[in-house]
Image 1 (cartoon, rainbow over the protein chains, first blue to last red):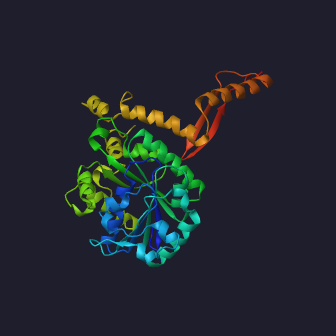
Image 2: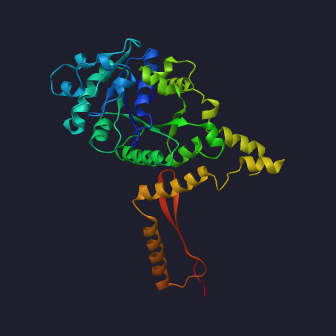
Image 3: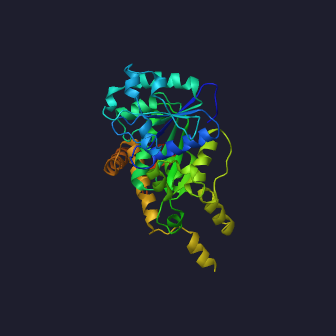
Length: 269
Length: 83
């Protein structure tokens, strides 16, 4: 994923709810803004909005995306500026409306305007494969699929990847969230390798299970502001990889580590 | 010592991780193709029957789904009896 003269539109999706889409959007976009990029996040989970709360911007929301589309306000008026990261803006979802009140065409139009001003446009996609999903993928040129190392999340991720492929997405990358390395080693959790083998897409990053995420979210602060949290470097690395930088995988997130070790111990196998 | 290491690094067939992988492999294949285990059994039976109605089969015929990346193919291997 590289920087173009026109901003890149990235949809963050998962199929299953609760895997950490909004947390990923909030932290990766904050990290990119901290690196100096102009970033806007668009919450398309109309009727079930969360991004404003996770980012701690809920008290600053005045207008929402549906009001922009219906011409009640301008796009500029609806954008909420994040005071902690001067380059980060959010376009809030509407809470009292429905996902079928906007169309993929309208989302495309909005993204076109945002792309002129921002280097990265992130779309927080609602769970599911219905209208909300179709709206969210309409304008994107690349996709990040977030999953957990659990069978149900992987199955939904696979379905989403299939749908993205049939919508001609060429750039689909995987983020594994909430990995517990000790459980993997004990043979009680799917590993990074297991997931990339099942889903057959490139890995963008691995975020370890981290209690600090709950604490940060309680406070409405991105976890990347907590330098001591395990999840913090993971989200920062994802942001840097999105800019095209080659960032080595952390030891626990190295998909080839165990494989290499196994091979060096048992060369003949 | 080597035995111990081998045990440590080899996949334990009964682990819940292994079980999850086995179940996912099956379910994802059928999800992608819109098929089911039952349909595959029927397909297998019918393919073998068609062949057997024309030529004599020798040994154990096999019909399997093979995967390459996200794509699948039907792999049919039916040994035929020579004269």
